[in-house]
Image (cartoon, rainbow, N blue to C red; front, side, top):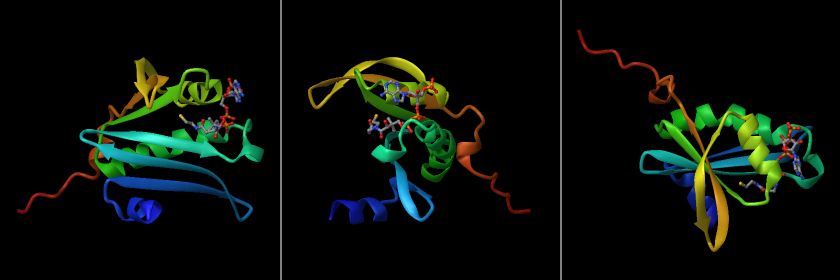
Amino acid sequence: MWLAAKLASPASRIWILVREGRPVAQARYDRINQFAEIGYSVSRSSRGNGLGTSLLKATVPLACRALGVPRVVGLVKVGNSASARSFDRAGFRRVGQTSRQGHACLQFEWVDRTESWRGPPKLSPQ
Ligand SMILES: CC(C)(COP(=O)(O)OP(=O)(O)OC[C@H]1O[C@@H](n2cnc3c(N)ncnc32)[C@H](O)[C@@H]1OP(=O)(O)O)[C@@H](O)C(=O)NCCC(=O)NCCS
């Protein structure tokens, strides 16, 4: 099953935001070479309250560290203003335009310049 494979894959991480016992948002990161691509959503009844933006801000550094990549890419269908705005607000940069499954998409990028994506420094043997 697709979800079981994603959950088991070392190249993917999924965060689910739970409020009052209910899942209200999810963010999934898939590692592709030296970057991760994000897909995320907020349940319809919870949209417009800042959750999309907060979810990106909270999970992007965790995903970089968990997947060992310094860069996250998000593709947003042209016209999806809420998502484009969420990426803007979360500190992503618009780096270009591309096409995905026949849809024109804006490409957003976030780069971890702190090196924290590498994880804690390894102690070298004495
Ligand atoms: C995209 C999505 C995750 C945004 O989640 P959200 O919790 O509603 O986002 P936020 O509340 O953080 O809003 C982010 C910004 O978008 C704006 N916004 C929200 N809905 C909007 C809309 N329909 N049109 C234009 N702007 C909108 C908000 O005002 C906010 O901007 P501001 O901070 O300047 O006020 C949500 O709409 C969603 O799940 N959409 C369907 C799935 C999807 O498109 N996923 C992303 C694929 S790339």
